[in-house]
Image 1: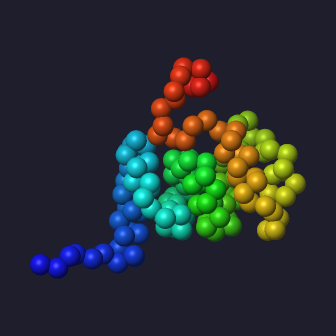
Image 2: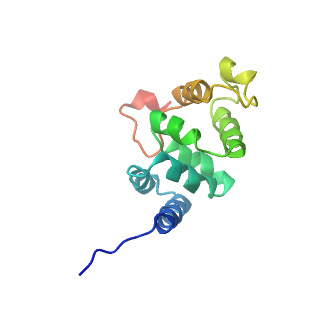
Length: 135
């Protein structure tokens, strides 16, 4: 018997369908490991195909380093929407380095995303290690 093979398109569809289903069920603990073995360009594509309300949630499942890599593969309109959505999580003010250059296509993406991700708590789906980190 031969091994069953799955095309890249079928794999992408499977990941996207499962990710969306888990997010709709608010199953962050299940969604996080789903993305772990997936390459950054494939995660970006799956995030882009989610409804806008779910994109930031899926993005927040990633570690800071994964998020930076995935961000670079996202369409610019999704990138901008994520920056705005993520900035709203910490009182709506962007880090100074992001303020003036947010819409500049030549902006150093890694710096801005790294700053924003560092201001946010642990990735979603990860339990805080101590009580004080919850607040």
